[in-house]
Length: 130
Image (tube, rainbow, N blue to C red; front, top):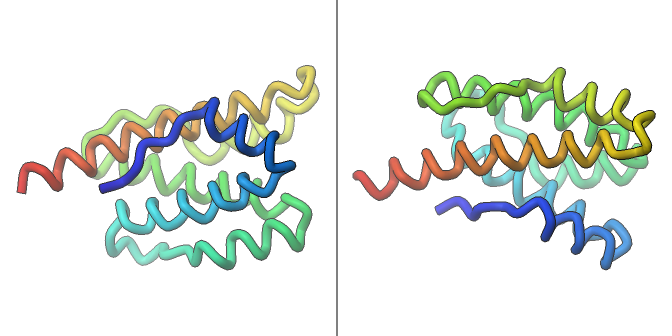
């Protein structure tokens, strides 16, 4: 089963651990998205996501949100789950939203987690129906 994520818990743990938990979050979510997607030929190595995010000082994570946002929207369409935002939406919130008192990335993260949880609920429901 895929674990549900809570925005406030992720934000609080990231602040308390001085950003270290954010990389744990990236690893776990990447692993869970690979599991939910099954064999969609878009496997993403979770360890590589963390390494590239650290090496590029977080810039790679913007690309990751773009890629995973599009992947989640495709999974939503395939599984009849409503996912309104795509990768471009997350990227715009992360980049341009930073100019709105720095709150834009938080909104982007919130939307991402909301859609992730919707997909996780559908995936977990499909497992229990088997």
